[in-house]
Length: 101
Image (cartoon, rainbow, N blue to C red; front, side, top):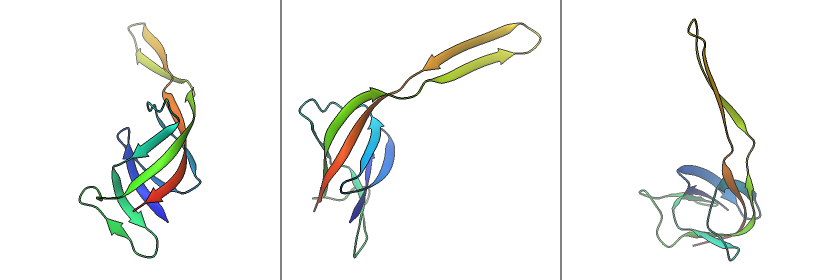
């Protein structure tokens, strides 16, 4: 069984036992619930409008970490203008435990 969830403005296709990195979540107790389920698959595919009622995906927070650093460069030729900045996104690694209907 699989589900498509929405968190952090992005959509993820998840299955039970899968580990994924999403944008930072406040899961201090170690448990997190995703209520915004867009689709549910298995023997029969169900698609919500926009979300499915009575379907939840629960997971366990494994770690809070920061992603790889990216470099952002602004450059204008012939005017000696160069600016370089960096960014590291805060992420949360979640283990999907159960998809309940």
